[in-house]
Structures are given as C-alpha cells and as structure tokens.
Length: 391
Image (cartoon, rainbow, N blue to C red; front, side, top):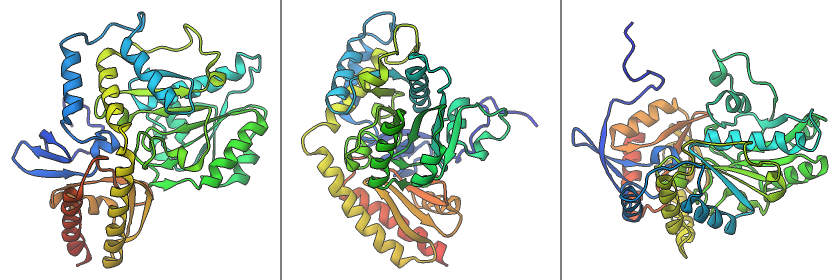
C-alpha cells in the first residue's frame, strides 16, 4: 500500500470543483451541481456572495493577521453584534466548531473549579450527538464509530438518551459540571429537540447548579429560521458554541457565554493563535450584515415552508425511497429506506449535492438564500433519482 500525499481520512467523491456562484458549483470537467449540502451547512449564503467577497477582498489588501496579543477591531465589532443579538455577554473566537466546543467544556469545568469545587468536571451529553473530532469532543459525542482506535476515551463525559429527562436527571452527580445538547442533532440524523425538553433542561441545570451548553455549530446562524435554534423554545443557555455558517465558508468559530458562566475565563486561561484574526472577522461580520438584515430570516422561513411542502409530497410519491421529512427550517433530513449513501450517490448523478447523516438520513442543508429556481431544480433532480431508486 502506498499512502497518498493527502492523508486518506475521507472517502471523497471523485470530483473537483473550481468555481461557485450562488447555490451552484462547477467542476473542472464542466459539470454543474446544485449545492444542497453547502459544505455541511457552512456556505450559508452560497458561493461567491458579492458582499462577502467584497469584504474579504478589502481586508486582504489591509491586514491578514496580527495575533491576540493585540486588540482586533473586527473581533470587537463581531462580539458586540453577537452579544446584542443573543443571550450572551461575551464571545471567544476560534477556528472551528470543535474548538468552540473545547472552549465551552473548559469554561464549564473552570466555572466550578475556580470556585473551589475541584471535583466537578463531568459533562452530560446526549446519545447520537456529534461535537467534533478532537479527543475531548469525540468523548463528548460518545459514538463508538468515531472513538474506535483512539483509546483511552477522555474521561468526564456521560451519555443519556436524547429527549429523555428521567435519564438526564438520574445522571447528575456531585461531579457534574454541565449539560451539553444540540437543539437540533445534525450528524445524528437531523433530530430537533422538543421545546419542552430544552425548557426542562434549563430547569434541571438551575436546580443542580450546572451550566447549560448548547452546541449550535450546525443549527445556528439562521439555519432553522431564527438566528439561533434555541430561540424557538424560548430557552437560553449559559454557553453556546457556533461555527460553520458564521464565516460563510471562511473558518470561524465562536464560544458565546453569559458573564456569570465566563467570569473565571481570565487572561491566560484559554487562547488561539489564529482565532479571530482580521480576515476571519471580516468574513463573519459580512455574514451578519446579510443575516441580520430586516426580512432575511422571514424569507428563510418562507423558503423552508415551500421546500417542506414539496418534500412531503415527494416522500408520499416515493414510499420505497423515503419514509419521512424531519428537521427545522433549512436543516432538513429525509429518512431513507435504501442505504443513504446510495441515495446521495444517485442525487449526485443527477447534479444535486446532499449529505449523509446518522439514522440513514439524507441531509439537505442548502444556502439560506436559495429561491424558487433552485428549489425547482433540486426537486427535479430528486424526482429523477427517486424514480430510478424505486425501480
């Protein structure tokens, strides 16, 4: 066996994209694809969005990187905007969702230990969750397929069934520091949490004095039709991890927190060499310019309603291919009956990019600004694929 120069940690589809515009990608061989995966919910405003492109070009000509040894104007601007539009009082910037979750976990431990409770370090998470690929976030997710070969598992993480309040309450011990959940499980199969479940988690966290952490790496930044998915429940966390759509394709992560939760995160307790550099902040601020525009999230919800209506009709038309549509907003899962990889491959053959997920789900994560033309094209491609799969 001869290993490839690019480490073979991905089962990559044999295509190379060289250009993108809006929801469309063009491959080096000239084929065009409608991108309903959006880089796994990352290119939230599509490809080559003019406002994002202009913002990055302007910043490229001025300053790429300094370091966090100095003030960074873009960080201060982005933090103020995120605070003004969320539950949070403060933000830490990093490069990825896993890093945002690492910051969240560290904050939860330090919150208790800085107050003298050295034994509180455990985090309760939900089975089926995905929180990243670092050793700690793999342990937080708890999925054996991701942990295999990376023993010993990092200590301090307990899993309970997603949505089961009895298990959650029973799992809390004097060592528990935090509860961590995704308001919509993404990798696990596009499974939204019941609002009543999130409300009860808030009550449990308050009762036992633990922090409530929401992982909105995939479901945040307008993906569900509100700026943050937890807003649908009326519940606020103590800490929240963001990434993916925040940079519109540029690597940006953020950990948002209340003053109470973050008050022990003082100088030297955490850091990042690249996190929050001027280029990243230019991208994220440009994304917020668009997403926070009046009417933008309303259009996301209207688009989602149209797409859901048509997807439900498609599921009814092809009962041998799909059994249900689930999710929230433009974070959509189609429960497949054939292997989901086969379905994704068939859609790819008809020029549509989608993403596999847990529980044999096909994920649809299109740019938030798609319109009727893209929906028509996507449904036509899916219809052709479903006809062949049904046969």
